[in-house]
Length: 551
Image (cartoon, rainbow, N blue to C red; front, top):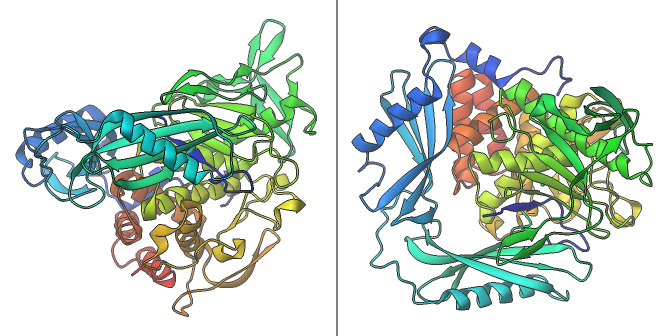
C-alpha cells in the first residue's frame, strides 16, 4: 500500500560537522563492539536469516506465534561483532497484522538473546468474516476524508478497503484499513487512511497518508553544486549511476490519477536533459533549477546514509529512488511515496512557501523511506510524531553533513522555503518547538492527540538537547536558547553521536507501535550498544529525555 508522507501543514495543506569529519555508525560500532570473529567468519545476511528461522520455531510460544500466523522478513542488521537482528512482519490467517511486527536479536553464534515486539498480546480471533461490508467501510472512509478536508471541494474520490487484524489499539480485532484519496480544487492530491472496526463500524484511527559524467548546477538554495550525470548522445540526462540510478524528472505541473487506491497513471517524470552539463540558472523561472536542488538533495542524503551509517540507498539495497519536481498547481507540499519509491516536490504558492526543494526537505522526505523500510512507525499518535521527528532529525543532520556555505546547517526546519507571508522564518524549530505556535516542547498524556507534525516536537527537542545541550548558544550564526522541563542543565554530546544513536534505535529496536516511552528505551539500548551502559553518552540520553518529560 502506498504510504505518502506530507512535509508540512500549511494554509492549503492539512496535513555535523562536514562530510570529512563525520564519524560513521559503522566505525562507532567497530570501536564499541569488540568483534567476536574475523570479518571472514562474521555471519552473513543469509546466515542470520537461517539462524532466525530456527529461533522462530524454538521461541514460537514466547513470540506469540501460532499455526494461524505467518511471518515475512522486513530487514536484517548484522553488527560488527556478529550480533544479528532480524525484523519480521506478521500475518494472521493470511491477513496483515498491524502491530504484529517484531525484531529477533541473536548472539554472534546464532543463539537467541531477546526480542522486541510491537504488541505482546496473543492474536486470536473467533472469525475473520467481517460484519461490516467493504463498500460500507469505503463509504465511512470517504466521509472521514471529507471531514478532514472541510471547506474543500474534492473530486475523483476513491477508496480501497483492505481487511487486516488490528493489534495496535487494544485487544486484536478484525478491521478494515481503507486508503481514501481525492484531488482538491487545484487538482492536488489529498488522502487519508481510515481504520474501521469490521464488526461494529466504529472508527478506530485515521491519519493523513500524503505520508517524500560530472557536471554542475545552479540551485535555488544551495549555490552551485556538483552533479553526476549520464551522457546520452550529444546531451546529458540528470541520472546518477554512481548512486543507484537516482534521477530527477519534470512532473509538468500535473498530478497522479489514482482509482481505488491504485494509481492508473502518474504525473510525468520526464528525465531532465541538458546540452552542456551545466544545469539551471539559479532562478525559479528556469524549470531545471528546481531539479538541481532536488538531485543535489538526493545525492547528499544518499552520501550521508552511506558514509555515516553504512546504508546503501533508502532500502539498503543499493537501488536509487527518484524525484518529481513541479508537481501540481501552487502545491505547498512535498512527500515521499513508498509505491513509486520517489520524492515529489511542489512549487509552493509563492506567498507562504517557495519551491519545496531545499536540502533539509530532501533529507526529510528520503528519511521517511528509511523509516518505512525499518521500524515502519505508524503514522498516527505518538508513533506518528516519532516518525515525523525521525525525518526532521535526519534532514537536519543531512544539512549539517553537506557543509554547504549557501545553506549552512541549522536546527530550523524548512527555513529556505518559507516566504514572508508564512508568518515566521521556518516551519519548525528543534531547540524550542513551541515557537511555531503549535508544536509541543514536552511530553504530556495528551500528546498523541496532536497532529504528528506537532507531536514530533518532543523528539525534535530531545534531539537538539542531546546534540547541543540546553541554554543559549549560537551555531553557524543562528541563536538558540533551549529550555528544559525539569530546569536541568543538559550537556550535549554532538551531532555525530545523536545520529548514531537514533539510527541504531530506529533500525534495531523501534517497532511500528513505539511511543515516547519506548523511544527512550530504544535510544538507551542503542547508546549502551555503541558506548556502554553508564557511559557519558548513555547518561546524556537519559538526561535529554527527562528534560522533555519522558521518564
